[in-house]
Amino acid sequence: MLISQSKINKIVCLTGITLTLDLLFLGNSFPTQARPSKNQENSVRVNYEGLPSNRRDGGSRGNCMAKGRDFVALVPDRPVNLTASISSQLFFYVPQTKEPKTIEFVVRTKDDQLVHEAFLKTTGQAGIMSVAIPDQVKDNLSESYGDYHWYLSMICDPNHRSRDIVLEGWIEHVELNKSVKDRIELSTDLEKSHLLQQEGVWYDALSVLAELKKSDSDLISIQTEWSQLLESIGLAELASEPLIKVETIDHLYSTSLEDLKE
Image (cartoon, rainbow, N blue to C red):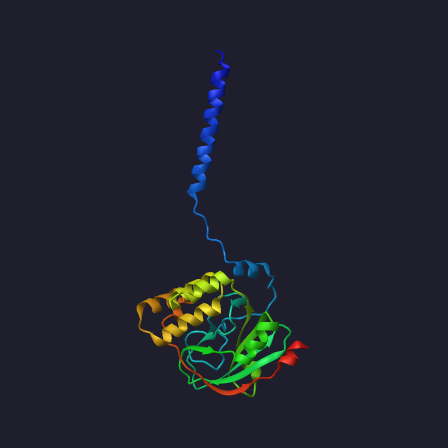
């Protein structure tokens, strides 16, 4: 049986409409993934392969620590993490020790120049401690250096520093665009932490929450945010640990701005 040209045209037309509707349906069937922030995209493009990093002691505790959790840096498990201010504090979980211990905190430039060294004294209590980078270091690095390398070493035996338990990582400084800065300026502290997380600036987001936690540690919303933030980097088990203070027993600012510019 022969099919007229008009019928063929109708079939082709209907087929085209069906295909168009199918494509529209498929396009709406899959949720659109949130785009990563510009800072995160730029960071991903950089090749950090081979950079030394270690956020956890890996159980190498010798005679230094009591049985319990590891010595851990509260950072995502990758070599480099971001800050927008270089004023953020760094946070570490210190397990219980048999006696008070000395901890050395060192910051070096990406050219391996020493810019800061400080010694801290623990009480032996387990908890989350914070370490701040002094203003003069921040001012110098913010202009000339995008990255810096930190080390935190628990000194188990002052006469045998090879027995230190060492954590290390890198910080990359990034600039937030004006619209993001304006939104942060008008936000509550909890909202500010969310925005900083979205921009991928980990150290800043954690610092904001930690300051809230210090002032309102019993507030459910803050504790929930704190728990979710640590859970997002695989450290949920540390969410209930207390924030503890450590005493600075020595401070050495070793490098001047002129030295950094050489």
